[in-house]
Image (cartoon, rainbow, N blue to C red):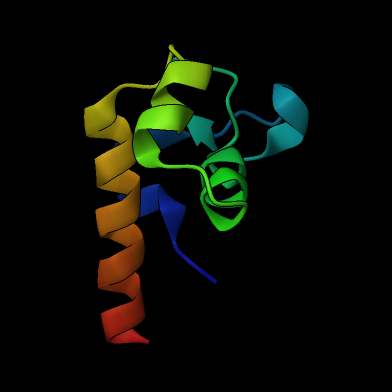
Length: 72
């Protein structure tokens, strides 16, 4: 399991969006990025569909995931 607490692009609040990790300053779950990419969407599509998420945030989440896989 990834340690999202080390990624500054995301946040979690127990009483917001069921306590799941979301992109900082939004209600967009981090899982939405991966679900859309797995379904064949491009990063540009995701950013268009979720305008509250910045490219920098999405890229930081992807980089954090990649770094975590190298350590695992």
